Amino acid sequence: MNCLHIALLQIAPGNRLEENSEKGLSACRKAKAMGADIALFPEMWSCGYQIYDRPAPEWTAEAIPADGKFVEAFAALARELDMAIGITLLEKWNGGPRNTLVLLDRRGNRAFTYAKVHTCDFGAEWALTPGEDFYTTELDTAMGPVKVGAMICFDREFPESARILMLQGAEIILVPNACPMEINRLSQLRARAYENMVGIATCNYPSSVPDCNGHSNAFDGVAYVPELPVSRDTCILEAGGEEGIYLASFDMDRLREYRRTEVHGNAFRRPKKYGLLLDERVQEPFIRKEGRR
Image 1: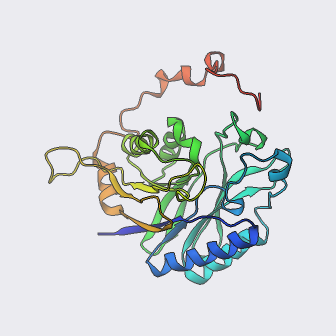
Image 2: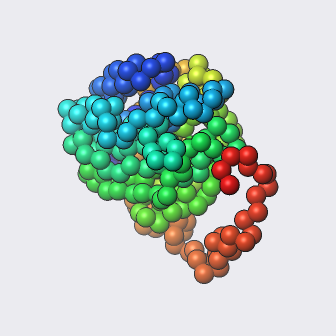
């Protein structure tokens, strides 16, 4: 079994950037001691996603540069620990900050910087600048190269997010999160893994954080195995609500063989039939957004 180990850092933030940096660095060290190849933070760790019930000018002022001291501290630790780190932040950006994940490889280099595409414009996130694209990279890990992509929280609710990452070659999708992981959202993640034959690892805040409930999770995307007469549950990890570090282990040999032989993902798509998805004339929203138009 050739496993990729992803540590889901289901930890509660402090009230200051410095507290979050210190606690995050400590959590990464613990993740490495557990055998992690990648450590993943919940959404917008730099400020603990503390953006609701506050005036937008107040929390947007907490944005920090993606090439600043906060991220560099985690890059240095990635080099020290020989472990990739998915660090999240409220990123300073012209026109309004971004909700960002910086994926650092185990050498401390930036594999990619991804900004949340589907910002929650119906709420406080209307003040954010949405990302422009999705990214996949070949990440060098101790078990060999793995193709890794990312989406953030609300991105999960759009099948196109995971589908694009799959088409880019992603084998594993990292998902920082900051909302209740209830049955329907868990079902979305299970579906994204199943329909694209990808592994999905989601890191949420614990239940001690307002409007969060823990339940960080991982789905390996392998629904059918020869030794079982029926499909299997692709969920390989679901945490409880308490704070902690949870290790999800993905059997990459099994996933790759499954992708080689099964019928989902890109095997039988009919892209020429999907033109309506790109026709903005029929994209009338069900609700009127009060934020960005």
